[in-house]
Length: 327
Image 1 (cartoon, rainbow, N blue to C red):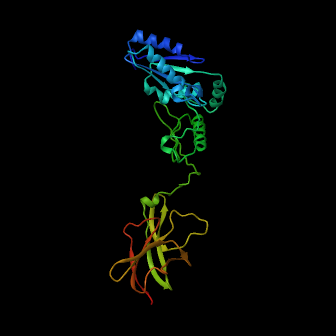
Image 2 (cartoon, rainbow, N blue to C red; image 1 turned 90 degrees about the horizontal axis):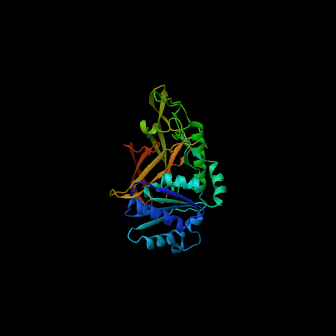
Image 3 (cartoon, rainbow, N blue to C red; image 1 turned 180 degrees about the horizontal axis):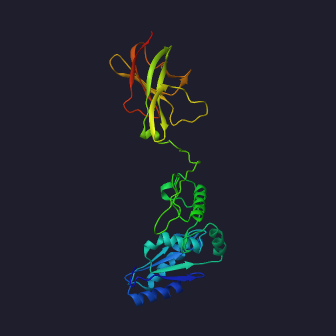
């Protein structure tokens, strides 16, 4: 803050240059300010809808004040937002605009604010002291711009407000624990799981217990290679588990898997040059199929095959098979 560190708030209907001028003169005379910063809060009237920048109330007020206080620089900052009301303007100042450290805050109030205030108050979230914390607007945080639409943002703010009314706090989790009753001596953490959350029990086991796949046999069928595979599965019992190797069985139609079994293949020529490469998840008759039709000219080649289970390609077992393309 400047001078004595006091911010004066003036509410006018509407704000006039004379009102602000008197207050600025008072601050200048009593606190010997090196500069005076005036912050304007309001709606479209303060914003200056359909008015050129140099013709807004804020710019004209700044020019008028600077003409009368040439020795002491005066700044007028307009924070008017379309359809805002005193409730949102208070939250705007509390969460963002206070960092400007204004010497004078002018709240421009008009009768449209009454209806706006009633509408925004429906989803208002209050703190334990009764002070407003936030309102369910369609504001999208900077980090989510382009990812979340304003409509989705409004739904999330509304859900957060309902969560706060139900729990009294904002620590949202998907489990396994949720903040319950908190006192100076203890905190209760009830067990909780949201079954609508797409990642359920065991979703991250693939990172803690990476499983692998192995090629048992490769059969050539015309221009295709049919691969019979074994895969590892994790069997759990309480806090113990063991890895079991068993024949690969395709998942039933419609059943989701983290990542289908994939064969990565590379065709290598006589001079160890790579002729073609790719990956296949095509399963026919319980076997992975690699279609090499048109991939190489007539001649002798080697095909290198490696399987990835759940995306795990760390230190795979590589199988090399001979492959000849007829003239």
